Length: 331
Image (tube, rainbow, N blue to C red; front, side):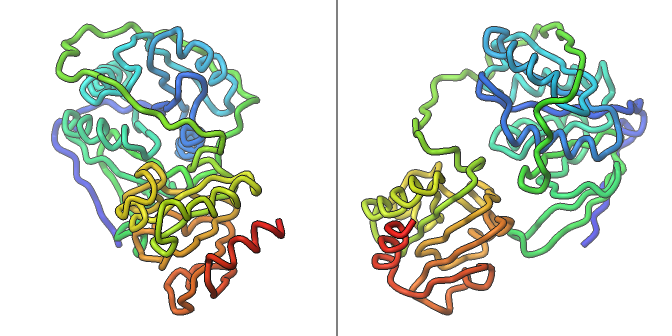
């Protein structure tokens, strides 16, 4: 499948710069693993790579210092302004548009996330270019590979826009090392604009001693076959023994067994752990789109015809309520 985007006259008139900008995502303490994967993708473009860290200095100064140690970065830009602490789309677009006007980056990349899905298309509209989403491979500076139709087809996209706006699927690229570089840090003057269009109210963050779902080495996910939220305790016990995280299919989330933040799939989180155990999950294509890049996949299902077994490296056919306790006991 081949797509080609044609630029507007305004895009053709823009000046080209041999530098890529990566938009950092962080929790106020450290860069996300997805950002390190995005830096890897940017490095494959063969250009200088600049990293943008935005947010108040009290939260991000240490992040900037650590980011300067990342290999293959030329510069780390720091925008010291609390307006960007929560990556509100209206504020981010004003910042990125200003930076593009002053630096003329050839590529602007961000990890695929709820935030980047919000602000990058708006930036594309303002720059009059077509964003390219969720890439999994860089072929050259203008050609990229991305999944489509819930991962059932792979699309090769060639863009002739002067500036390419790209979101990167983190599981498609190895994480760049955190040490070994010597990038320069540069403070960016904050912008004055009307930031009252939207307002951050609050957020509720679940606290857990288990690893983050998208960064865990082991993920155990449950589906509708678990029958209730109480039965997810079987998964938590196994996850704790393996040092892993717990996920869920959309069917389990829609049934109210677990919160939405545990959903793995096309409309949930995309994971690629070393070990993925699917328990009571039939294997709809929407779920497979979020986990099929896992290194080793184990499926536990009483239906031997379940589609999940087509992508599994190992399969157990049987009653999960008997198999899970036995498996947990033997580990």
